[in-house]
Length: 383
Ligand SMILES: Cc1ncc(COP(=O)(O)O)c(C=O)c1O
Image (cartoon, rainbow, N blue to C red; front, top):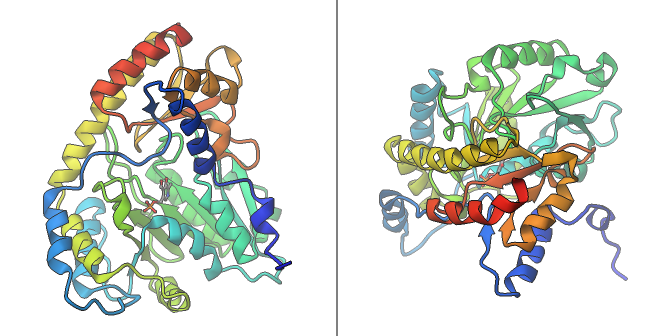
């Protein structure tokens, strides 16, 4: 028998895999499916981005560099300056990634020493499942901190004992699954705390550009020393399949990450980087996407709130975070919706320490037309 890493069997299946199975079972009954589960929007990637990718495919495509191209890093620096008013040095403070997920998974290895007592990495619960997984596979001690109410993560409320054993804190703003946005004052306060305890503070800002009203701030606006931020083109530019994002921040950390990531050779292909350069250089297509998600969000918020349900957070991201009516179990309510062909994610799927219970997450993926039909299907269940 091969001796396998026990983590692989101990961890529950990645939540989206389980949802996919349930969906197939309902689809097999011939019911129309309204799929609000996986956050993979169906709108096409803008033409100019597709074109940039095609043009960059050469007869021979060699190994890409870990650092990415100068052009891509310059385009990212220009984006960060436009969007957040922060000047970064493209040579030392920016590192392209092959999507944000691999970066979430691999970044704990920057700080974790599996044999040390202080090997804790903290992250919000409910949250994006890869935070916990990355820490576990790096040999760190994951600590999931429950969120409730407004779902804003406030690490200064954590016990000093825990902070002393902590090497990294993940923030996620705007937050998946709740869509809550952390105000700049809270980011500043958390950074002060992190510096006091010599903790690397990483902010996952994969949804920074999909919002309603005021643009969400970046941790970079609070400072750069001891800071990393993570961004993605997946939702901003309809590029989930391209696998493209970036890490940015403290040059000392970025330099070490470049060294770390050279070991597995983590880099996006040059033709993807060319498409990414085009995408980060343009904001007009992002404004169109914001308007689209806003229209979808409004339809559903009007419906749920009109029926007396509470929609929490949900100011940004491509998700709605809805409190299950009548105190019903989120898993049970999601199954009842699924029986009728409406697929939502039970909140507990995003929790590792009990987080997310009592909520469901709807990804704003179906078209406006489909959302109208789905509302009619849901109406008898929320009345
Ligand atoms: C909070 C958060 N971080 C990171 C990612 C990963 O994004 P990417 O598609 O760039 O890998 C996601 C994807 O859904 C996410 O929700």
